[in-house]
Length: 269
Image (tube, rainbow, N blue to C red):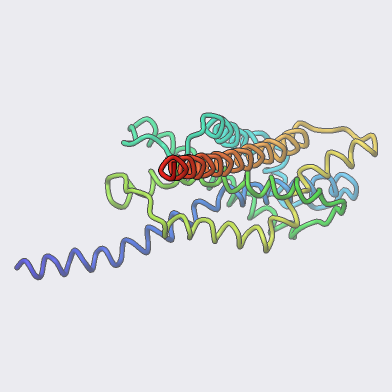
């Protein structure tokens, strides 16, 4: 009887653990995909105002004009929360997860998922794949944005995705494992290399182009510009903290070596 129970629990673990890993990894990509979608829609809105296509897809028109503020506002809230989290120097969230936190995470995940799928459907219907606007950012700016986007995605994964998936599948919060962190980082790195690094700069370039052409700058353009540089600021903070951490370790090693040398000299005397 005990052997059968162990077999059933082991078989259940073999099924639930890969599903849990896959689900958390895919949901963690919703935030970087949101940046990619915002960049594409920003560039598409700029080109559509220039060309004025006769038949805009219904889903895209609905997403761009009827409700243009919910999606950028939600992403902005997440970025600001990640910035505050980084300013506090925290790397993990407090345990256990409270019920209000869990319900809020459910709402945020559901809204962002609907917005992303809605925008993807509209962009596919409009044939929006990606727009090259040229004038790429400098290498430090791209590096800082990459670090900030990775840090922001980790916050999204820990604060929203993981609690929802953990309590849905297991009924309790599970500890982080290195396999999960590697899977999230690898999926983000792949998305960055394939798509995000080529297109996300449209969030900044559209506003700069409109400013040069003396065109009207909308709220969505300013929000996209702000999201880019807020994310880059988070990356700068993480880089600065990493340099400080390395400096503290190096200083500690130097102090230890000096103490060892002084003790050795005293013994010789």
